[in-house]
Amino acid sequence: MRIAVTGSIATDHLMTFPGRFADQLVADQLHTVSLSFLVDALDVRRGGVGANICFGMGQLGTGPILVGAAGRDFDEYRAWLDRHGVDTDSVHISEVLNTARFVCTTDADHNQIGSFYTGAMSEARQIELKAVADRVGGLDLVLIGADDPEAMLRHTEECRSRDIPFAADFSQQIARMSGDDIRILLDGATYLFSNEYEKGLIESKTGWTEAEILGRVGHRVTTLGSRGVRIDRVGEAPIVVGCPDEDAKVDPTGVGDAFRAGFLSGLSWGVSLERAAQVGCMLATLVIETLGTQEYTLRRAHFIERFTKAYGDEAASEVQPRLP
Image (cartoon, one colour):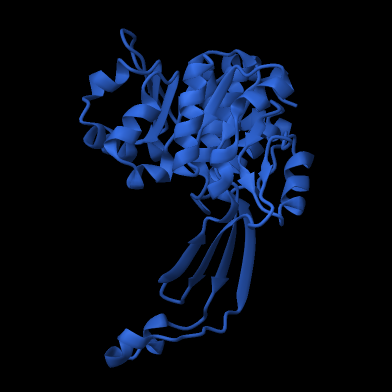
C-alpha cells in the first residue's frame, strides 16, 4: 500500500535562559522593548508533522512518501529521513527560502518567548500530487496534514478530482481555518483525525453535528490522550483502544504524529482497524517516553514485548511478522 503524507517539515531551535524574563522587563518601558538573553543551552530538533509521521512509518518499515516543502538547508535533514526509511524524493526544495523553523526561549519560570518562521512551507502549494503518483506508480492513500493552508486545500481537491482516497488531519491549523475551509477539507475523507478538543472545534466551526460529520467521512478517528483512541463509523459500534502503560512521561510533543504513523502503518499492513489503532498507541507511548519527536528507536523485541503485555498474544502474533 503506497501512502503519501503531506504536511510541514520544520526544525525546532529550543533555548534555555537560566534567569527570569520578568526581571528584565521595565514596567514603564514596555512600549519600547529591546532585550537580549544570554542562554546556556540550545537544542536543535527535527520536526514538522509530515516529517514526524513519516519518520514513525519508516521505523515500522512501511516506506512512506513525504510530500512537503523544505529549504536550501534541507540536505542534512533529508539524509536523516532517508536513513530511516522515508522516501523524500517528492519534497519540494525552495530556491530562495530556508526550511520552516520554530525558535523558542524558555526561562526559569517556564515562561516562553517563541517565533515561527514559515519559510519554504509556503511553497507547498506548488506541489502537484499527480507527479508524486506518477513517480511511485499510484497512491492508495494520502494523509493531508497540517501545512500551508492553501496547500492543504489544493491537495484535498486534487485527491477528489483524481479519486485518490485521503485522510484529513488539520491538527494545529484548525485554529486559523474558516468553517468553509474545514468543510472542504473533511468532506469525503476516508479518515478524519483529531483529538478531543479539535473534534469539538470542527463541529463548532463547520456548524455540522457529530452525526452529520460522520456521514461525510468513512472513519472518524479521535485520540483521547492517556485514554487511547476511539474510531467511529456510520452504522457500526465504535472501536475503543487503550494505551499501553508508560515507563515515563518525558515529553508529549509529537505523540499524535506517532499515533498516526502507527495507525497508517497498520492500514498498510492490512490488519484490522483495532489492530492498527493498537500499533498507533504503542508507537505514541514510545514517543512520550522520549525527549524529541524523532529521537526514539524502535527495537523489535522490545516493541513486541510491550505490545504483547498491552494487547495480548493474538494481537502480537498478527503484528510481529510485519515489523522490520
